[in-house]
Structure formats: structure tokens, C-alpha cells
Picture (cartoon, rainbow, N blue to C red):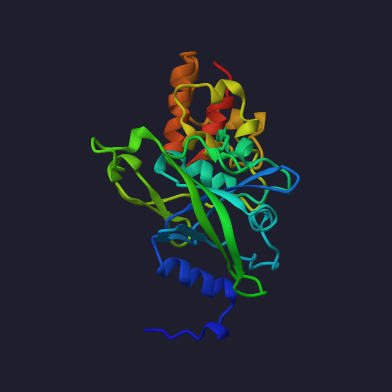
Length: 292
């Protein structure tokens, strides 16, 4: 067994040990709004429920390890003292992951992730319509745990209204754990799905993904693709070039056969097969290929 003194290892290394050992962790999909009215949306896995009376949720947006800067979510909750915490289930995990991309201040992560803004009743930040449970919260206190990179900031939130989708309720009106299908964070790229065990979601690019808002409508409106598919497609820095698409098609007989059929539905199904194997660039090449 190795023994580690937290003061003698780099913060990034210690952070990785903590995330991998203290898991699985529930995800607070935090929707905030700036003092000037700009929405922000980002997931945080340092999160849990700590009281029922009063109902208290706590999440922690940490200072960035690499440069000790703070996140827009933290600045917003300090300014407005309001937040909506949306739970993340399997249906929206890819879009939630995409929203964690480090977009510039003022960029709307709802648009980038392809998720739907839903007005709240008692607070200004929007709810995520696709989330099965949404907690409107007032921020009671923000406690800074340190001043260096990696230091957490405990955002202590009091729930003032809860919204629960009827689709996740059982016959008695309680949340059915199978229907809600929650996911949680583990170390590295790994997540845990309550209904099915571990799975991997590659972290968003350090450069900026194009976002769901830049995916062509013929893809977004296709019945073949769900929100997770769109989240994966939106997490590429740039689309393949026409030359890259042509080379891919010429080297892939199965794709040639699909294209020769000139069937849009089959083409989308082929692209989805690549997405299911986490091969996003090949999926894009199929989608951008012209019929033969």
C-alpha cells in the first residue's frame, strides 16, 4: 500500500486520487444567471443533500487547478444568490458533459448543449426541461475552503420548490429508481449508471466543441438521434473536411453500400452505430457524405 502526504503531491494528482476513491458521486447540474441576466449551465460532482428540514443541497465549484481562476457558476451565485439544481439521468448525460466545456463568459450553455430552458417559479435561473427532477434554490451561504487552485467553495442551497416529472414516478407517487435512471461521476472519464453499472464519457475538449447549436437541422430533427447523440456530435472542435469524408467513404465498403441506397434513415442509423462505439468523427463523416 502506498502512503500519500497531501502536501507532497501535485494538486492535480491528489485531485485524481480523491475523485477516483470517493465515488460514485451524484451530479448537480447547476443553472445560474449573472447579474446582467446571462444564463449559465454546468455540472458539478462535488454535491449532495444534507438536510430535509430545511431542505438543503450543497455543491462545490472548485477553483481551477491549472490557473486558480473561478468558474462562472460561482461568480453568479455570489451575485444573485439563486440557483436551480437539476439532476442528471442517462438520457442527458452527454449533453450535461458537453455543457462543462470552458466556453467564454456570456456563451449560453443551454444552446451549446441543446437543452431546453424552462422558466422557474420562484428564482430567476432557468430549469433544464429534460431533467427529471429540478430544485429551485436560494443560496444561504458560500463558504470558500481555500485560496489556491483546487480549493472548493461550498454553495449551501435551500430548496424553495421541487419539480418532478410524472414519468419517473411509481403508482404511489414516489420516485421509481429504475425509471429515473440516474448517473453519477467516478474518476477519470468514468460514470456509473444506477441501472447498468459503469460507462465512459470522454471529457469535453480543452478546445471548444462546436455545440449542438451548430449541428445542421437535418441531423437535429432526425428521429434516429437522441439528446446524448447530439451531445456527442456537438463535442468536436471542427467538422471533417470534404477530403477526409471522401477518403473515409472510399475505404469503407459498408458506408458505400448505405450511401448507394440513398436512404437518409439508413444513413443516420449507420452514423448512430459509430456513435454507440464512441467514434464521433466517423459518425460525422457518414452524415456529411453525399449519396453515391
